[in-house]
Length: 113
Image (spheres, rainbow, N blue to C red):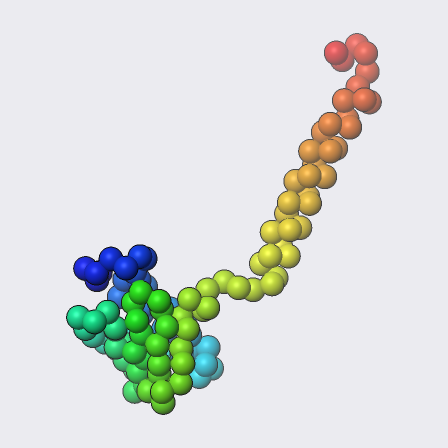
């Protein structure tokens, strides 16, 4: 981990995982990280087994690839709309279950009380 504390920093292994996921998505096949090299200025060079390379700032998670194109690694997380829909559906089901339990009190027999 980098010694400079300008807020949150990504570890080299976190950057490597995010970079591999991002690069795999861009090339359409699974790629592995072959090496990582950290520098004193806070950048990490991440080399892949297909010969490509990312240079990423460990503080922001942004950088460039071997072609000079911008790379923004924090965006490789779980930003899927289907996950949000599933979570929303789960909340609705929990609320319906709670309402059913609450409503069932009205239908109990007096001898059950």
